Image 1 (spheres, helix red, strand yellow):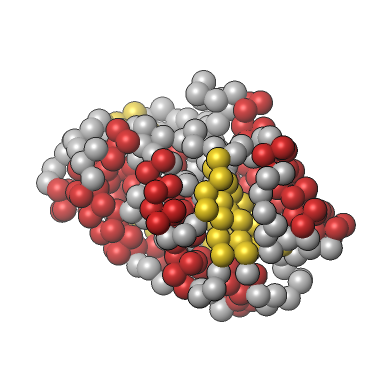
Image 2 (cartoon, rainbow, N blue to C red):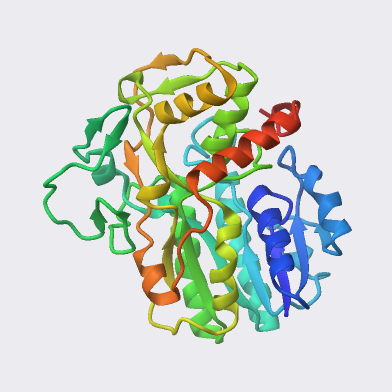
Length: 355
């Protein structure tokens, strides 16, 4: 099988490339990256040593796909990943749409031309913000918890947010680009007869993740805490009670192998993938973990809320378990340990990755 990975020199793309190649003898991987993200150059040499060809190109340019060889499958791991993209003053709304939506169209045209299957690494941020932001969470210790005796609602339980949860606006400009990409992918696949899968991922985390909050709060927090950089609990009273789950990208490989081998049936093309409640923690709990490893470090408090903030967001991956017999293999503790070890071994990682 020949596999094209877009965004291959990002954390998710490079981790999946290395893990998939190690797990699948005979697999040919090549990738596309524009190298605009600080830190992405760090991954190119390692990928090339493994025999992975990396092409310099931009998803926004249709002509950059013309020189690429034909692939059997395309894994789209390229995106601006910030829910604040387009409104934070760092990127424009047009740039966000060009990266996350126009780029998807160019990939789908490539798939149409070569009859290649398509897999989109999507996001939990396609789910409606308002009901999640208004969830009447309770506090247990240093973390928000799903409210006991919460009335039944479609797609929301103590196990997390499932695929049945609403995707009604507002979902942020970022969420809108990913949701629209999902719809286009499924329509292209149906219209032009190639398989398309949508994998909605929660927070992906692991060693080597670029040290910026929008690219992974767990890696950013651990790296910044170790270096005694300023850290702040934002919103929700400034206590750090907000909760996310995390998942190591390599745990996706078993599922991706099944999707590209034709398994799983055609009924459900969209699936949630995340660590779930067993792989979730709050920022305050993460700080306590860091203190146990690195010693104490004061964290500032800013009670004021930001747009799109959600107190408790955990992915319910029960469908992936039923349909694909998939579940995370890397424990939360192991993920944190691996990030911390990488941070200790790479003292200049925050600077290299643009933080």
